[in-house]
Length: 117
Image 1 (tube, one colour):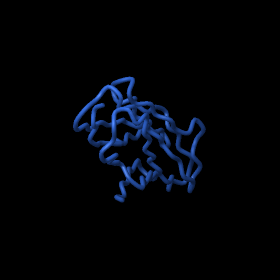
Image 2 (cartoon, rainbow, N blue to C red):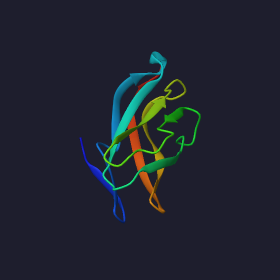
Image 3 (cartoon, rainbow, N blue to C red):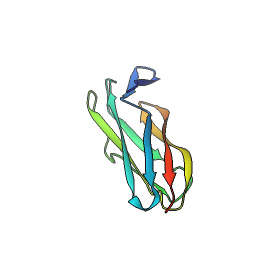
Image 4 (spheres, helix red, strand yellow):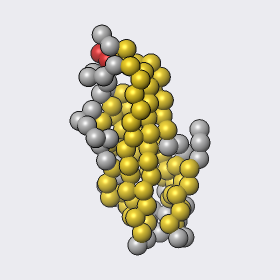
């Protein structure tokens, strides 16, 4: 587990991890999920305003639609469908958070190896 802090003035968004390794997965195994949790260490609420889908329909993000209060945790979940892929993969999504009057971006990465059927 690695800690990653994103600072925006007085606001601090601390992620428990920004990478996930799915290891070896089979293409027919179905969708897999990775969760990325953060703590809002700022004195005010922050809001996730967007999470990219990684550039294809194979990645679907889910995230809190309501602001995350000061001191609270939030989670971004990435669902990845390996069905159309084989071999090594490395992908990422970009999370955009409104922290005070600033937009803060974080890159959440995931990787693995897909065995085709």
